[in-house]
Amino acid sequence: MSEQQVPASVAQRVIIKFLTKKGVKPCAILTGLKVQYGDDTLSKTQVFDWAKKFKSGRESVENVSHNRRPRSSVSVTTLEFVRNWLVTQPQSFYEQGINKLPNRWEKCVEREGDYVEK
Image (cartoon, rainbow, N blue to C red; front, side, top):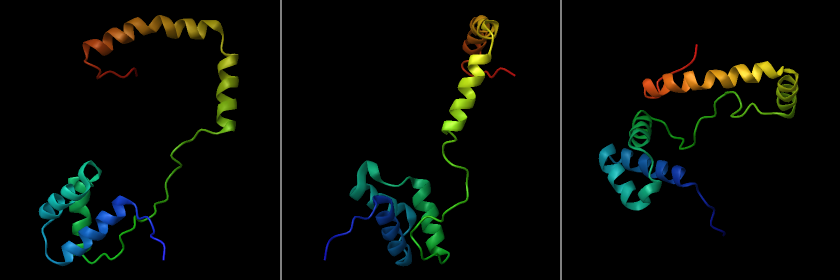
């Protein structure tokens, strides 16, 4: 029988589930995971959240899939549209944008990066 690779995050959830059912506190679980997984350990928040879920009766260690927008909205159609739009802009469009940069940069520095042009 061949050994199947389990992602570290799922393996840690299995451990969290097992130890939570044994009554081990999340802070102790986190300490043990840090010893075993080092820098690859789930965050404190993740460990505590998963422990809470398992304590409440959750059985699955897999993430629940969510309906969400794609991570990237880049497509050939989008790229073509943007390129065509950029090509149709007059030179003055770019000149005006470049001329605004020093003032915007100054405002950004003055506000220590907390600046958004509205």
